[in-house]
Length: 75
Image 1 (tube, rainbow, N blue to C red):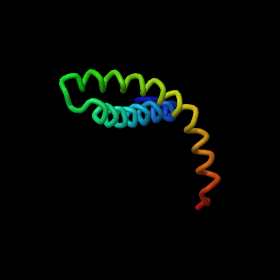
Image 2 (cartoon, rainbow, N blue to C red):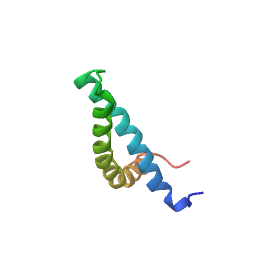
Image 3 (tube, helix red, strand yellow):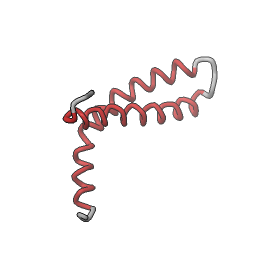
Image 4 (cartoon, rainbow, N blue to C red):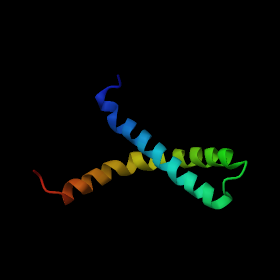
């Protein structure tokens, strides 16, 4: 089991991975279509995007949580 204190890092890893997978897949499909090299191009685009997205999520997520906290009312 992963320690609870690792939760935000794991969340960022999963969120950035899934979102970059989806967006790079759509972008690759729109750019080159579903040809024979689609899988390799998508994988390459996804790994590059994930490296960037992970860094952005880890920096931006705490700021986004703070803004959401300020915009929402307490129960």
